[in-house]
Amino acid sequence: MSRTLRIRRVLVLIFAGWTLVVAASLWWSVKREQNQAERLAVSAARSLFEKDIIYRQWAAGHGGVYVPVTDETPPNPYLDEVSERDVVTPSGRRLTLVNPAYMTRQVHELGRRRYGVVAHITSLKPVNPNNGPDEWERQALQSFEDGVQEAAGVQPINGEPYMRLMRPLITDKACLVCHAKHGYEEGDVRGGISVAVSMLPYTSSALNEIELTVLSHVILWLLGAGGIALGGTDINRRAREIALAEEATKRSEEEWATTFDAMSDWVSLIDVETGRILRSNRSGEGLLGLSARQTVGRPCWEVVHGTTGPLPACPLVKMRETRKLETLELYLEEQERWIMISVDPVLDVRGEIVSAVHVVRDITAHKKAEDEIRELNAGLEDRVRERTSELSTVISELEAFTYSVSHDLRGPLRVIDGFSRIVIDEHADNLDTEAKQYLELVVANVERMGQLVNDLLALSRLGRLALKRHSIEPREIVQEVLEDLHAAREGRDVEIIVGDLPKCSADPLLLRQVYLNLLSNAFKFTRKRESARIEIGSVEEDGVPTYFVMDNGVGFEMLQADKIFGLFQRLHDVGEYEGTGVGLAIVQRVVDRHGGRVWVEAEPDEGATFYFTLAGDSSG
Image 1 (tube, rainbow, N blue to C red):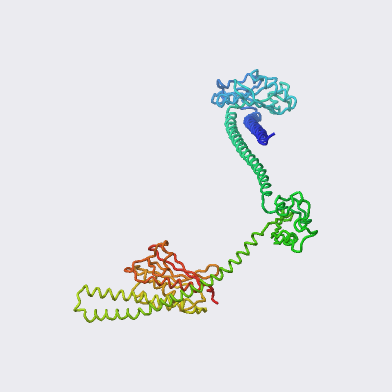
Image 2: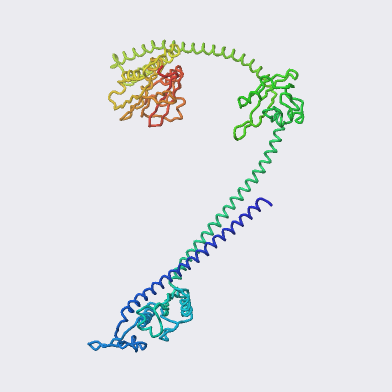
């Protein structure tokens, strides 16, 4: 039988069981409501009976009561022997005696007319024929003779169901006044009072509850059936998944076996304690000249080395101790071949070694390649040393050339600047407006050229100056730079915040140049802000401080951030913000010489933050 068919049968049984459980619960609930309706009706009937008994006992205790004679209450003919049955009051009003039985019949008639309550005083030996019992009352009265204290049951009256209840009337002393002549003695069952309460109000209420019960059970059955259906769907899905997984496992095992035999390495599964081969692939034929059948059951050292025991460096022996992968490279002289043997433990769920995977790989070609690479590396190192020496020479010559050119340009620039100013100051009256503008343009460009020369000289000095690192306080350097740049903030609303700046190991002169260039840029690019803000501080990542200078200036697009540290690179028009494009290149050169790195984060019109680190920048 298929798994799917078995699941279907189980689901059918569950569904049938669920239906039976819900049906049994519904039957029990309906019976409970019906019984409850009957109990309530019996309780109401008992209340009516007890009320009749109470006023009957009261009337009997007083020997009856006198009431005015009316058509509805004429003199009782069964009390003719009572001398004072009828009396006349001094005012002439006629009264007649109403004994307990007469009063009970009168009250029952009134209750029937007004409230539909059916009650009847009766006896097996009635004095009044109207008090004769019906069949149900007769049976109840006969049971009272046998000692039964109460009879109750649902009976039809005029086609409607009624709860009928009857209890016996026991003769006491007060009753003997009227009934002694009929042969009754104290304690005899004289008859009984039956009370009937309509079941319609109770059955109506019970039907409402039964309807709710049926509805709730239907909903419960539907929910259960739906749950069974969903569960069945899920179980079927899981069964299909299990079947697919089993099929996939089978395919995987077949593929693994195929792959295992197709591997170029000789792979075997060995017993850890004895070293005997439990399973082997076919690659041993090409590598060792042995088929898989010839290797299974033999110790691995016998198959590989031809020895009766493991070698001193046997990876299997080492693996038993270390419980991890162990390898051994071995040269086989007879075959002139290098092999690598690896032994990897196979662990169970408790972490215990149950077996080991033994792999033998031919690494002869790998060894030859290593020798060739070693020879190539030796030659490459020599060529790298030659190229490095040549590059160092070129860099030194370029720095010397830059320094020489920059230094030699200073003299001519001073001459041009000097003579231009003399002409402007002493011969201004002889010049027209256009000539003055030309000379002023010459002076401005000479000044910019002079600044560029100074920056180039500073850049060239970085390559020639020896790095003198020692422990310094960056806060002191920042305060000195801020004092030097006092003129840049004069007359402006600039908020300067100097945060925590931990000690670092750096060249103080070069670090001063870094802060001078970064703060100069911060003052320059916040110039158009009504309220400028510049913050100097640091953050710590993995115990290493990262220093920063932050401003709320014009900022720039981060797409341009990769070229901002290049020589002569500018992101803003020179007419708007002066500069040579050398300052940030100097910053990067200084940070590089300290073994650190520098980067920037910025947004247009939001400002920029420059970060830098210094290798070995602990306080030591």
